[in-house]
Amino acid sequence: MPLPAGEGFAWCAAEAATAAGLREVLAAKGLPKEAMRVAAYWKRGASGHHAELAE
Image (cartoon, rainbow, N blue to C red; front, top):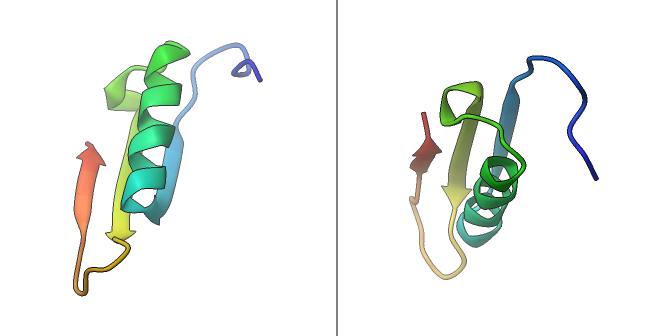
């Protein structure tokens, strides 16, 4: 699916592998990393996981 025209911002929170995939897709579609916040609030098989994948 194409991103809408114009400036925008993406905020994503998901499991670590899913969040990393979302960040890659958004970047491949041309969204600059300054226009996204992607966080992994949990990771399969780990407890207490939190990672900022794009700031």
